[in-house]
Length: 298
Image (cartoon, rainbow, N blue to C red; front, side):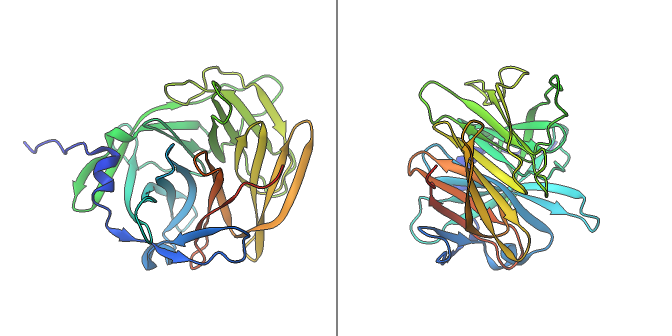
């Protein structure tokens, strides 16, 4: 009988990074810096980058990709583990996500959130998939997999239609509080919402079925959102030829648009508490950038 593959966890992946990112100028975005992937990942039509998140220390970035079929169906999902602490351009490796029975996870993965050793992945029509980053195993030279631990699906709350889980993030910017924020993409923006739950301190999953806040943002093409000290920051795309936008605000004050603050094709958003900066990435082949930029004024 074959021996059971060794569980390496995230540290084991970080010790075997086999791909080299490349520095890239982000001069079109004020105060931004970043990198792009190696030549293969930067140009492939088979895999598309979506959600991203950073570790609590700000030293590791995780980027989600989905494999797209000819009919735009989702065939598989992977996570890129990027070492931000190393000098020079980051190195990284891919980890394929598997469901509880070992089959490829087939979701868009538009949002990621990292809490302790837990990784939360947005599942567009079902809610959240939870992975334990200690469970990464090696299945060959430079090949890693991570199997899903549990999932969480909300019930439909009174007076609202089911949420489209286009992205998610965790907010721990206020002492003693932890919130899960999720939102939905709509090209026109009509009815697009941000939703916030109290989150469990162990897993980051909602600790109650009912949300504490439903915000009708109505922002076209929302791709990601974070909440920092009570203020939402939202990233919105604007097609294949126009630069993306940031929005700041909340339900009471309304919204302020920071027009064309991002490159073309921005996706998810993550907030790094260590630096007080945002992370995002763009998705289109040949124009893929992972970049960090200052938190905009409210």
